[in-house]
Image 1 (cartoon, rainbow, N blue to C red):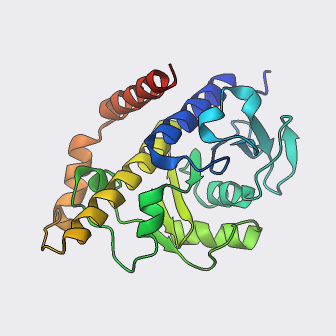
Image 2: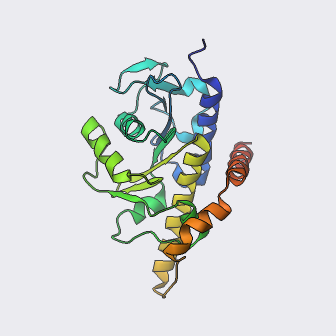
Length: 235
């Protein structure tokens, strides 16, 4: 049996490049992972390269739930507990991402709820969770577990003065949640800057709007679009 999920690793590499092109680039920081299909832990982007530099399977390492590297030749990011703890707390989640996009990170400093002033915020399904136990690295199991609790059953979380967390039942969904979160935070920050009154999608309409727009076929369409865009940007 092949113990290296090559197809999933190629998809995760594409996700890294998409995130790089959609505002999540931050030098060599930021990482995505997916659940190992054999239950051994998480396949995680290796440390030392930027999201846009991830080329394929060789840029990932397999980390077990104690942080021990089981496969791959690269270094493990210090924040591996984010991925292992979220995956253990959320059986429905297959992919996890943590990055430092500019607008969402700036928004994390505000004591303001993210509202559905644009479609992207509605796609998230609910307002992001909030984590402010530390502004530093999530580099211990207790901190990773605490972040997983702050995420709860949501698709995203804001880490105060630090960055974001996004998850999904597939790599495509997780990546789109990261992209939409950054766009939603940017839109609301721009509205707040005007100091003018504004209206958001009423809470009672949010679920219906999400289900109406973000159906499985459109998830596939959006994912394919962002991959084409990332490839074009690299050409």
